[in-house]
Length: 457
Ligand code: XLS
Ligand code: NI
Ligand code: NI
Image (cartoon, rainbow, N blue to C red; front, top):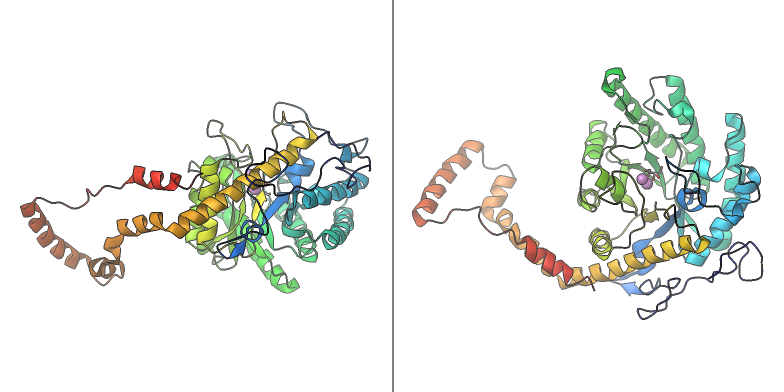
């Protein structure tokens, strides 16, 4: 494919040289075709597109420039116009290009931050008017294309006024600025029929403990969530409120550290029924866990709302936001989705970007297609793994003791500590006599992996 040049000689205005991506089957060698993603195909009772609910994020795909802390932008896009500025004209052109890309990829959802889609004005009122104007056009484009909004969010981290935090700022006036942005962004999300509203606390953390009142800051963060929940009720917004954990970057420590921390925080403030989690595996890795750890934990605790489908490089200590292309990871992730019965209002949102060195226009099409296809393959693998049931039977067997009458008596709290000690003393004596102590049963890790690998093909 040659790069699109904005002419209108093919289908579409912005990417005339890219045809809508089609399912071509596993034998295809075309990187702009799906080998496994057959969106209408039914797997375990549900269409592939409904299991996966793919979403393209606006910020990386349409605002990504390849700039990094050490270098200037490397990527220029023809739909940015001549000047590439943050003008309304560019903003409106960009959304046209975005919907053409969504449609050609065949994704049904997208996500955005307020400032990705509309430029900030000189005043709050002007910023609001810009957002209204651009989102009005987005609403029309949604109606024309059938593409829907997965979630919206307010960018509470880029503006210099947020350098000391947004909701967690020592200054209440900055909290108010953040609250104002949240209100406008929630209104826009509601107008667009969004299925969620995300809080990612980029600046909600600290750089040094000596100048920080952690408890004040965490209480204020909870206050912001409570205000958003109340406002959601007020306007009749039915999307889910989501918190996206991340341990650090840009701050040294962030309060939304990981899934376990956020769930504890939500419970502390009585928010566990009103908030779900948007889990991003690259953040999980930054927290020192394996790729799938937080997704599995959130799902098992009934708290997984949505996924920012990306991955990082373990050898690098930052959020590299890479597209998922690895089969083991894709299968692990889809196993969780099937086990929880699919998403309710969430989806697989590509919070991922092409590399700084991937400067061709076709690169971002290829990146999305490759990841959608890897995840589609992962879904097929996971469906076979789950329906054949070997792995779940092995897991059940490993914990069978807890299903026995002794296990349930302990689990239910029926047996007090002294009774347990008394019983165990007798059991231990018996075991010693027979020379068979408990606790040395093989964990079968290699067998579990080997069985899992049977489905990675
Ligand atoms: C940054 C986050 C961000 C959120 C949305 O690391 O992943 O992109 O998803 O604000
Ligand atoms: Ni994210
Ligand atoms: Ni991230």
